[in-house]
Every structure is written in C-alpha cells, then in structure tokens.
Length: 235
Image (cartoon, rainbow, N blue to C red; front, side):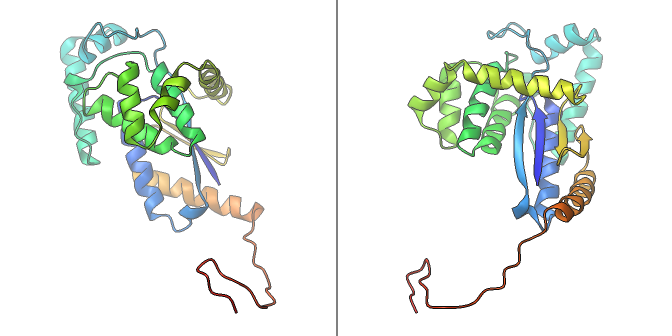
C-alpha cells in the first residue's frame, strides 16, 4: 500500500510529523507491505537562494507578527520537537530557497533513498544550521546517505527535477493540499499536520484493512520437488 507524503524541508512540523509517522509505522505489523513516497512542496518559492535574514525575522515579515509572538511560537515548536527526540536550533537555521534541496530529494527517490534524503536535509536545516541551497553542501549531504558525488552535481543541474517538483506541487493543489506535512494513505484517507503517532497508526490500520480486501495476499499451494536454494543447498 502506498503512502504519499507532501512536505517541505524548511517546515518544522514536517520533521516532527515524519518522526511521529515513523513511530506509528514501526508499530505496524504489516509495515513490509507499505511503500512510502515523498512528494515535494514549497511553502515559499519566493525565498532567495542567498540568506538575507534570520528565521525569526523571516517569520515576522511573512506572518506579520510581533517578534515576541514569533519567538514564543518557535519556542513551542522547539519543545514539540524535543518531545519526539529532535534537538532544534532554529536560531541557527539558514533561511534559503528549498528548490535545490527538493531536486536532491527527487534524484534520491530514483535510488530508493527518498526517506534518507528527507531525514538528512531536515537534520541539516533544523539541527545543524547548514545552507540547503548551497550546491557543495548538498553534495556532501547526498554523499552522507549514499549518493555519488558526480551524479549529485549532474542531477542538481538537470531541469527535469524542477519539472517533477512542479508536478508534485500541482498534484497537491489538485487534491486540496494547502499546508504540509500532508499524508495520503492509498489515495483514500489523509492525515494533515504533525499528528500524534496514535493518529497515524489508526489511519494506517484502517487504510490497510481496506487495501488488503482489494489486494489479498497470495497463498500458493506448492508441489515440492528437487531444487536449489539461495544458500547453495541442492537436493
């Protein structure tokens, strides 16, 4: 069963939601039958690639809130992150455009490393204060989870990934996604936001029961004969 997750690597609730979802998935007995597909979403495509302001200043301007209100909001988010084992350092986050980061994720998905890419980029932005719009930084981050340096550089210059990102965003708009994280289960159920693990597990269980009815497990009646196994035994 497919679970599609729309997120942006500069969204603090997306990282928290990822952790809670992973907790739920770890408790799910049929997790071997789950395919997780990460989808790109940009909360603010207008952010420049070169940092010009702090995370606090950016939110003050974007949300039209007082500095004290934004600081209180960030403090609450940091506390939420702590509760799921994440040590946010939002005062060190470098606010830059996330397009290149999403290009790296799109390439990583082709190597079945989408979840690894998301995790590494979230950590880089929220915990380590790395510049996720800088090509050399992205190359190192990609190497950290198993990608080849030359391939990373080539694919960050490939326009096709920008098209894939645009397609993901258009698809999100088509199904009514207005904010992230947004989790879609088998295109029948959805969870919006950084919900508790229990909420994810409930939706996961309900969705899987429905999916299994349409996709019954194949149980073969086997007639045994002479054969060789992968461990080299032949009889």
